[in-house]
Length: 279
Length: 361
Image 1 (tube, rainbow over the protein chains, first blue to last red):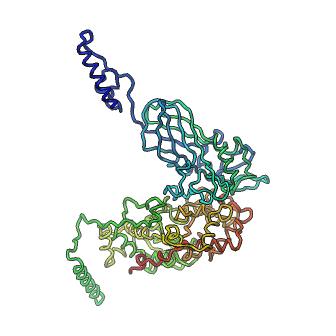
Image 2: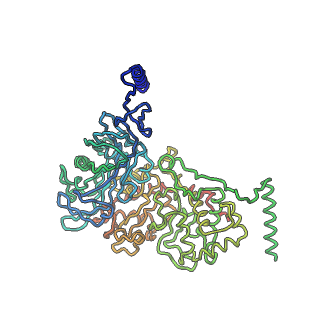
Image 3: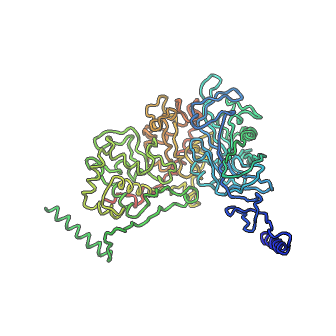
């Protein structure tokens, strides 16, 4: 309907101009690129309004207070957390869902895919959603760490089931949000296992509390071409802010531990950030 | 001479019967294609799991599956014609055997327990053997034929035996459109048959599908299995929404202080993976004793005792063996009994008795 109105106006202007002896070569502003989404065949002068569809890729990277962490570091690199524990990592998997790009006009581009990042599987370190984005100005990026309540349905996702990613129904069901495992040195210097697993929090029998984290980052950027957006996880933050997490106190059997689950959620709030946007 | 006449007679008879059952026998032609036969996916897998993995260059066909079954049960592939795949992968044992280590044609013992075979098309990461060294079922099927402590043959010799056989060239033609037998086609046929070995009809499956009930003991055992502070079995062995009952990945489950068999570490060359072996599925445990990659445990009780109080530390132990400092998760005797009852509810008698999976020869 808008297009029709635009055409009528354009036609009116054209007619109007043809009757105007003073101006025989009327100028019509618009997008003059036939390859654009809003090509205007009547436009005689390009006004920089052309928009295009582009692919966006999300790249998931991990670091320990700025030092990159990859699967190559597993079982070998040693990190010191805020509490002073020396630890190594043998597994890191986490779930990201409902990624959206926020446009300057207030609308959002909502990607439907979720992504189970597994550092040992390079194919999971990037996500290229099916939906294309429109070039232009954006003001923010948002996503869910884990699944929100509506999405966190037990057994609903075959690929996550096959990955054994389920969260026990006695703990509220749905799926894990994160599994971080490895070894740390206890007070005596002896290696001990830890399994920092996060998901829905069990308050008491049959009573559960949502535990996902919704992230929203205000960030102005302009999409001009196929773009890669980096989503960074600073692993050290899981142990630091606001709660100093001492693995000597809490290392394993944390899934049923309500306070541990909620402390993980609190510490998670500063874990993610937006890194480079390249295009 | 008499043998020749017998064969001739049988051939003639088979021609007659073939003609009588098929009035218009298809003459071999260039454009022959075998009959597609997609896997029948059980409802519980359909509901909860991704579709089966079928290689694009080896689709399931009626003729391919039939050939694969015949090959699987035929000792012709072994060096002296005495051993078939099925010698160490018996239907009654859920396609393993009841030995700690299987014995090859020369009487040599292997070093790892024969693996049971089922639901192989749902092994998403496509890593086969205890140490994951084969990256497809087709690749896996090539190995035992030439392994000197197993079937101890050469593929050249095995293919020559098949090529010279009275019926195999025709069966390969029906399966693949060529009478030119190769080891690759032989492995493809065996893989097609193996992909049909689907087990999803245990009492626990029926319970999940609302078609059966479980005893209170079995249900309690499942709660112990799913409880992180008791059994904590589910991190590697599935759950009610992950009905393969394995994660299909590799772990050091705390069997030994000194690792002698490096498992995955030997394949990847990564010493941090020494002693890592694939989690076996918990389906059909009633038929697959002994247990573990080296068959060290004769009974399920021994397996449960291992996780309860027998864990041993080694540097590459999986963090999920979290209670290693006190030997294990310390289940009570009644918890152990309940857990065992649950585990046995994952055994599927209709699988081992399936007439489609028995020796056709």
